[in-house]
Image (cartoon, rainbow, N blue to C red; front, side, top):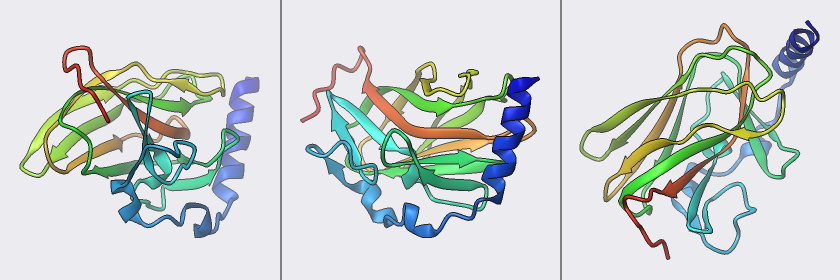
Length: 185
């Protein structure tokens, strides 16, 4: 009962917030940049310890997504209703990756998110990302296998049902899978 009350207060608070666009004012073109030196800059895709980190805040925005400052530094997004998040990546080496998302969830039940990769030619695959109950702390989702092709790939995350409250996402992490043995430079 206490967690439900806290979640409802959080929902009321977040829905009443009107964040200025300056919190997430990076141009969408920055999504194609890879920074090897500045992984703490939340406005760019970066590589750290051979992992590709995609900040959640650089997705194409909509009214259902609120961008806000994160206690971890940089930005995070909060999804209140049904929404689609899209990330366009053009300089990532082709291969198999394990994808995880760093999330915060205060609701016992969440419907899984749908995930698919759409490269320049066609849809590569679709998967379901289960959302764990994180008791309001940052945790990673279980990894799903993602196959990226040469060229531009669009990662799409779709939230179909919003009956279970909001969900906060900090970033997505792509780790080369053991099968592909990629060396990122």
